[in-house]
Amino acid sequence: MNFLFAGLYALTGLVFVAIGLLTKKFPPKKINWWYGYRTPRSMKNQDTWTEANRFASELSQKIGWVLITIGVAASIVFRKLYDANLILFFIFLMFSALLMFVLTEKHLAFLFDKEGKRISR
Image 1 (cartoon, helix red, strand yellow):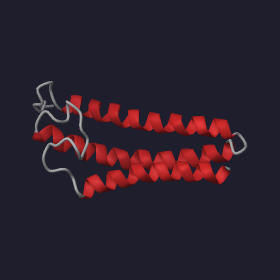
Image 2 (cartoon, helix red, strand yellow):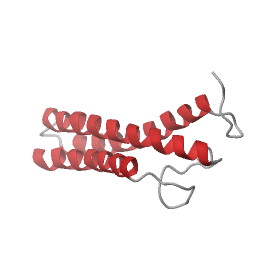
Image 3 (cartoon, helix red, strand yellow):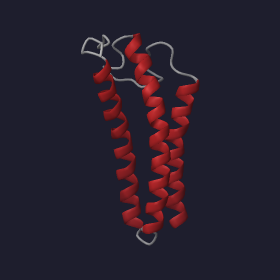
């Protein structure tokens, strides 16, 4: 059972890493509804779109590697606690997605005003 959760954590982390690498290598050029980091703030204009996708791509890779590391460690520490591992897995997954959203939106709010114009700092 331990290997099942280690594999599940690793696979989920690798998905985050793969998405980050994919969007870094093939960034979405134009604002669209099917590929890239899509939120109202990121889709204000081409500048916000490009920056949001650049930042989210890098962040996704970092979160993926952290998720792999923490997840595999948790599956070893809680190796005999199937329910705990399952709950931790979903907590890590939800936290990772939420963290990516929050940090990317904060990054955009720091760089752009509400209309999507760059703030000179």
